[in-house]
Image 1 (spheres, rainbow, N blue to C red):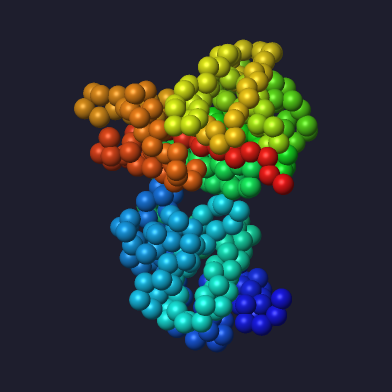
Image 2 (cartoon, rainbow, N blue to C red):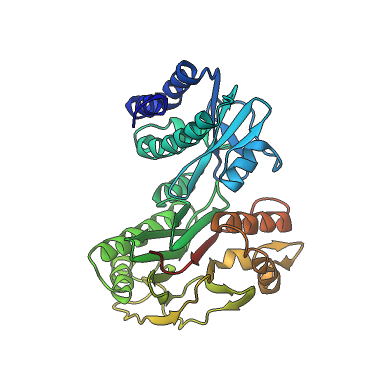
Length: 376
């Protein structure tokens, strides 16, 4: 690749970690005559787009920035261009440039540059606090800081599957979490329903997550992954603390789904507009007893099936002594069929916040997994 886009890409990848956006702005001015370049990152609640420079947040759903974020397509408003910033389905925010060049080729190049920016931000975030600090509208609790750093990401898109999750209350979550990985042939998902309060809950979830990763990366089968994590937690706490988890392994070519339910959150399937709970063999939570043997179940997904994993914090959300409950959840999930996984998760969390008239008090985790069928 050569030409203007290549020079901008080079400027982004060569920039010091804390100056990626500054160097991008300088190169866009030199190459395209763009005098204003701003990065807006989505906050932990998926409710605000926060400017890197600490200016005014964008909250209105009809704003061009939110339209670009929601639809993952460039939006043009007057002289401003809004381009989605992300990588492999992980949405980080939007890039605002002004004045927007009239040349359609230049606009396509800017869209590609915004994607490059998403990759570069993912690469440098672990080496500087600049971007993490700017994407929070309030201080995270210590437990929440630990939980968010533990996540592999918030969303993932590949031709054969889509995946997204969210933790609530985002700025004060304690023990609920999720983890995933894929190798092109299979995707593994763990959804954890934590036990305890504050940092103690976050430490317990961290131990379970790393034990499960260690077992998965050793090539162990799903039941053995659960057993290894169970042993690790029991060895540390001798049964005084335990943790519920749902482990899933999906064969992306066939739709064969394996599951281990260790006192887990609820698994719900949306198929052709119909909602049904997937009945699981409930087994002991991880760390409750010494030497628990776990069994896996097998199910067959149909192309286009959507799975939701929700913790008890979702169903137990309460407003004026009324629980959100199964009926409200089922009704809402039916309406999420046309939405991308992250939009479905975000919509459900938004409905819960509206129900309780604010942030959730108890921990809640929502994960959405789509199987779109084998792809060439």
